[in-house]
Image (cartoon, rainbow, N blue to C red):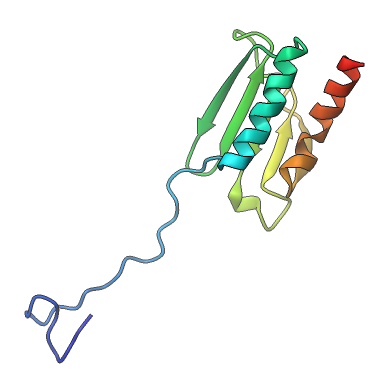
Length: 122
């Protein structure tokens, strides 16, 4: 920023702001995490899940739920903000890695798991 022909330090240098920097890590906000952990707790109470893992990368955050710790995840919930304007930033993956549901709303993506929980409880 120049004021009267001189920079902030009087040397005539111009201060240039950094360009819009991207967020270096994707994560879950408090409401999203509360919703996911609520489902996890109910699945643990039903005897379906016993362990979980979370991964936070530069382009995606994921929550994996395991029946046993030594297995592949039974379900994986992934948040990719880059897909927000396309097919939705939320994806639900099954045990074999298949895409079960995609969407813009977390509640809609979690619906297949909640429906399965309701069948287990009845």
